Length: 197
Image (tube, rainbow, N blue to C red; front, side, top):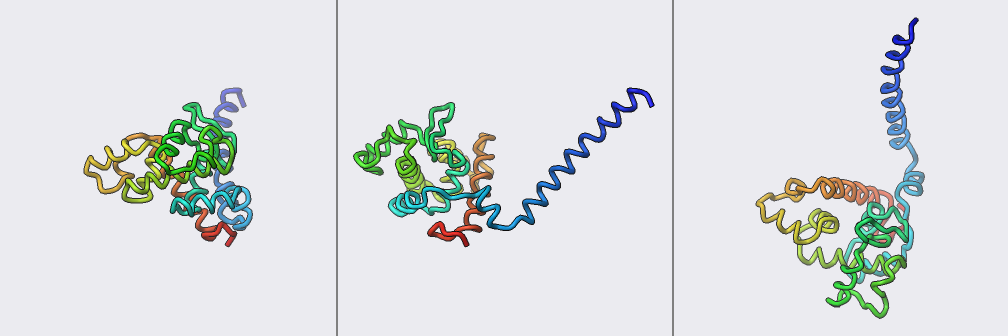
């Protein structure tokens, strides 16, 4: 058996091994008990801040959890390359605008302190409220949280009835899918008070 034969044998074996590993992981996730998935993949932290802010802004707390999961994966001091900060990855300029418009009391929640969990959640919920007031459905709100209100309004002006068909940014298309999947999982594992089901 020459070296060329051994190479081709491994060349064919490696993809099969990768497929087998992915299959086993998928099977493991599908049969894992709900509490394991909840604790490991879909945790909830800062429940009190989420419940208070979401109630104040009329937003489903489970949607807030899904956004946090996809934006920062619950890392309080997360910062994006674009400058978005905190659990809900709010831009400091957006926080200042929301405070200026009266959506957030900047004396209680300083827009400069977005890495503080309660502050970041408050501004994220205020942003979701503002988007909800200006858009037609949750999918549009989720897309706008990523791409911006004006962009989503432009997409919807194109005549497509469904935002998922109108999105032209691959990042936003993927973001919408991720947040919706996370939202479904949070609704599966938690009640409206963020208590495990």
